[in-house]
Every structure is written in C-alpha cells, then in structure tokens.
Length: 278
Ligand SMILES: [Zn+2]
Image 1 (cartoon, protein in one colour):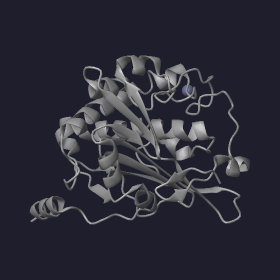
Image 2 (cartoon, rainbow, N blue to C red):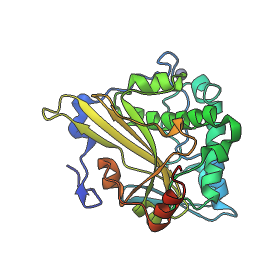
Image 3 (cartoon, helix red, strand yellow):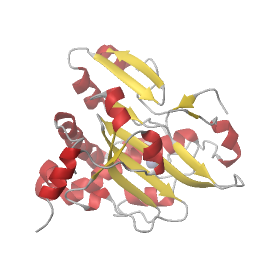
C-alpha cells in the first residue's frame, strides 16, 4: 500500500501485483511482431495546442497528482514525460495502421471541446460524422482502444486479445464494453482540459489473476470508459454501435469505476423525455 490516496481510497502500489504483471518484451503490444520503437501520445498534440491557445496554462492530472505544463514549449519538451507513453508500439502500427483512428478522434475531440454536452442525454455521432458515422464511430473507439492498450502495456497488464482484434477490424468485443460518460469531479477539476483516470484493476480473491480493468480518458467533462471483464460482458452495449449514444453520468471516478451512475441532471431528463420515440 502506498501513501497515495485517491478520492479517499488508499492506492495500491502496483508492486503488490507484480507476480501478475507481464515483463516488457520490447515488442509492439498490438502486432506482437515488430520492435516497439514509438510512444503513443496520451494527449494529442492538436488537442494540447488548441487548448493552450497563446501559451495558456495546461493542467495534467492523474488521480490527485496534478502537474502543470506551461506554454507550447512545455508540449515540445514534454519535460515531465507525461504527454507520451513509453515506447510500446512499432512505427507501422502507431502511424499508418492507426491513421483512421487518429482522424476520427480529431473530429470528435474538436466537436466535444466546442460543445456543452455534460447536461445532454447523449452525443450525436451522426451529427459529428454525418453519413459515414458508423465507420467513424468504430475508428473513434479504436483510437481510445489504442490509448487504453498503451496504458495496459505501460503498467504490465495483460492485454485482452479482444482489444487487438478490435483494432484489427473486429466490430465488437465480447469481454469488454466502451461507453460515453461524464464525471462531475472531472468537470470541476479540469474544466475544459484533457485528463485520464487512474487505472482501476480488480483481481480474484487469491490474487492469481486479473478479473476486471476500468480506464477512462476525458475531453473536458466527457469521457470514454472502457471496461474489460475476464468473465465476458453479457448484456453489453457499445457506444460506437449507436448514432446517438447515451452519456452516462457519474458523481466521481470511484462511482465511474464501480459503474454507479447518478440520475441525469434536469436538462438531460427533460431532453430524454422530449426525445422519447413516439
Ligand atoms: Zn506493431
């Protein structure tokens, strides 16, 4: 147990689970063939520069640990080593293979940054992407899938095969679910900034295997939540299969991890009512 605390809960030192972690192989976690020579950006440069405007303040945070990066030079130097993940992907996977993911994300991220959504019942992917929303929503989800995979690789967590298959063109993951979310504490803490949740993991009683992971990454208060469950995800619904996925609201990130949604705000309730199919 470390002396770090997250939302009142003590944070477990990852070393406590070291016997379950995978030692770095030096290979790309996606293709598992070529050497890992590149590090994926945790936050895209286009996001960061748009956010900073003329050298404004940028907050980076994980858990209670908030750091500041000032000005564009901060992004260029990445002096805290917080913008890029350690090298865990090969060049072809990180660039050419994931170009459509990056493109879909950039369009979505710009829209979400410029639109007040946290009181809305959902986000219209049809509005964001137009007629091609189905293909673009899948690529957006794959962008996040790559981001979460890089976080797993960094921590030494076994990467679900379903995630690799999804990046490779599958259109569902039977043991994982992705949802659009909004988290109140994130909105208060980071305002319109970009942030990522801690990596939540759950193990079995005997601490012999991982049972569940939950990760989230946010643009302002709007995030994508990924949950993997060793036993499969029955009754799952993937946001990227819907033209108007629901925004699931949480009070804080502990509730987000435990999937305890709060009631939607008044505006969302009214809009949900107004948009009920007749
Ligand atoms: Zn690769």
